[in-house]
Length: 481
Image (tube, rainbow, N blue to C red; front, side, top):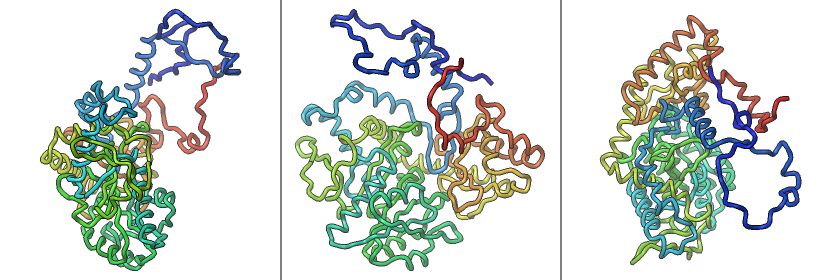
């Protein structure tokens, strides 16, 4: 397969992609100011504009992305995002606005953020909201900081936060950063929270239960009202990790089920390209008793829109300015374009697509939990271990079909896990292609396991030593002599 040279390898002395006006100030030698900045190993590549454009275009073709094919990462909701939302975020009045403008000069931006918050409150069933957190895990941390401040205000010392073993992996980290102790609650045979275990662990030292619902098995916690009652009877709060909101927006409002607060992932559910490091959005919605602790400022509306900084019980700012504004524009546009019925349709299609894949692969791969799947389904590759094939081999084999692999080895409670989330934006033909590829890989495991051990064979880069790469990261380019 063809590979793409680095920018340094494409570099030619004297080429440039820019022109500057004639120097009208005294010239200087950069070495006088920057010392060793002129060393050979800190040089920049020299390329023309067309060299750069073609380089990154070729890379985009070699790389896999949502505009190229299915991206079925479980619990990540890697769905196609309409281009109209991108265009809206690039309108000059939004894209070129400065975050330090006075309120009188950015009423339109404040109105959009206020309205987005109102939409999200209505979708989730909560009373107040902050848009400030930068992404999902940041929203978790923000929520846990509010929980801590809530109990400090009440004069209660609570040290423990409960987390089901089917929760998202960032939950324990957020809990620890907020100063609490993590305690695991096991799942039952149906893949839901074990109520007896929850009751035994619950007392006045517990501050909160963090729940992912639907959980990472793709199963909805059908007894969620009872779960909230158990926690509230001990004076504890219940937090919802809303990363899987794509399964039930317009259908179920978690605020009505008893949750006290939740975060949402605008970059998963509400149309922002997800992946590549950002940007994201992790709004946190809360019930009225937690409203005083929201990060400041909070957007208010009377005769005009304004920022309320007079919040003595606030946990303070958690991000510069008011959050990732470009993400807000995309989410606002997405919600306005779809409307209430469209949001519900999106979730129903996401659930339908996941169950279509489940039906197509059940019996080919193990299905460890038989409960009804929502937006994602967890299979296990354990039945192929007898042929010497592991889930990693299946994932690498999919790459040769031009398909991205699902999430593998997570959730941790499933051996050889494959967590598949097709989302609502995939067509029937796309789902059929994925099912066909997975069936062929299962057959290859029996007839030609060596090929899967060596997969992928058709990608620009073959199988990498991922463990070595993460432990010995080398991002320096060294010119060969």
